Amino acid sequence: MKIFIDGQYYDENTAKVSVFDHGLLYGDGVFEGIRAYHGRVFRLKEHIDRLFFSAKAILLSPPMTNEAICEAVLATCRENNLRDGYIRLVVTRGVGTLGLNPNRCSKPSVIVIADKIQLYPQEMYEHGMAIVTVPTVRNLHSALNPAIKSLNYLNNILAKIEANNAGVEEAIMLNSEGFVAECTGDNIFIVRGNELLTPPLAAGALYGITRGVVLDLARDLGLRVGEPNLTRYDVFNADECFLTGTGAELIPVTKVDGRVIGTGEPGPQTRKLTELYHALTKTSGAPIFG
Ligand code: PXG
Image 1 (cartoon, helix red, strand yellow):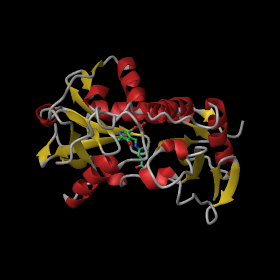
Image 2 (cartoon, rainbow, N blue to C red):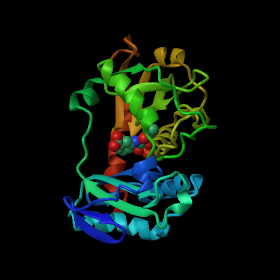
Image 3 (tube, rainbow, N blue to C red):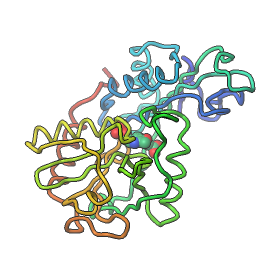
């Protein structure tokens, strides 16, 4: 596997970052997780735009333009002959000195890894997954804004550990007010009648690319879409529930905190949206091989 670091390709054994990189020392950097399907990178522009928004929010100027980073993603896929897979794009603050001051870091680093994706078990896509609400609450906007996809993912990792300890793969994270924010690496949706609802960004959700695509598909289907504050009560009483993410795509949720959601099987709107999502990934995206 060839890995892109600052304009050059390295073999996976020699692809290294410095121990003085503030990405490692302080989690000072931003990242994206992107999918390639059938030789096309899905929603590439949206991912790179979000990367630049995350970077701007932490006063990090990527050393490449938006277009150059898009091209680096495509070129790294070509270099690895990757048609289907997962692309991890990272921009770190770069090499600095011990001490927090980011001004001591001379130049941010850009890393692109194009690899295979590990998905949730197929059985869960067919029959739904069980999730739980965990005690770790989502970061406060006023502390570390959850809209920033930063290298500091401990908030999510702690919640993921709590989910794993409870024997499940994902967790609902509430915000400090007790409203549903999102999951550790996925956004959450509920279906209520002909309404599709997902928490607003202000509740602590990431502006998920998959979330945006699903909201568009739902509007096309004639569903009423909304982004109200949601509580666990709303989730427990939903007709359907599913999660969205670049890695997960759409995955049905049929049990939350031991309670059965809807019929206990993936619902019709979830299935329809999943079908439309898959159709879209087959036909749209930035071509890797021209
Ligand atoms: N919330 C959080 C906190 C995320 O990290 C999402 C929602 C979904 O957003 P997208 O844009 O992907 O629809 C994410 C994305 C991984 C992995 O390696 C994590 C994500 C995406 C891809 C892979 O676990 N998280």
